[in-house]
Each structure stands twice: as C-alpha cells, then as structure tokens.
Image (cartoon, rainbow, N blue to C red; front, side):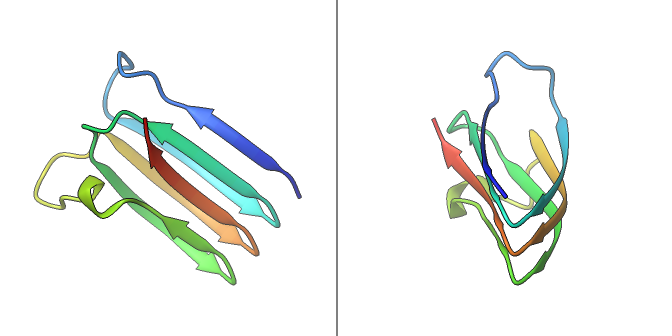
Length: 79
C-alpha cells in the first residue's frame, strides 16, 4: 500500500531479473532508454505498463520483470 521508485544504473550487469509482487501499491522502474524490457507478470485488477519502443521481442532483454500486480501497477519509464 505504498509507492516505490527504482532506478537501474546503465552500468549494471545484464540481464537483470526483478521479482516484484505489488499489492495495492505502485512500483515505477526507471531504466536507460536504450534497454529492452520483457515481462512475465500476472495482473489481477492491476497493470504492467512498458513503453512500446522498449519491447522488441526479437532482441535480447536487458531487464526481465517477473511477478504479480494485484490492485496496483508496475510502470517502466525511460531515463
């Protein structure tokens, strides 16, 4: 029942896997604009939002988000 802002550094070792279980809250993940993001989330009365240009499924993902969003949201934004 809160908010979390998570900033991923461009120099981080890739790929990164985040395991997020969001319940009645919001998580905003800030990633470099050049990164590709893949999701494996279950949304129950919640949402996972990623900019379209970050979801090239033919490319190797730099960030993989796994988990659940229940009555909350996981939002990916470009830095």
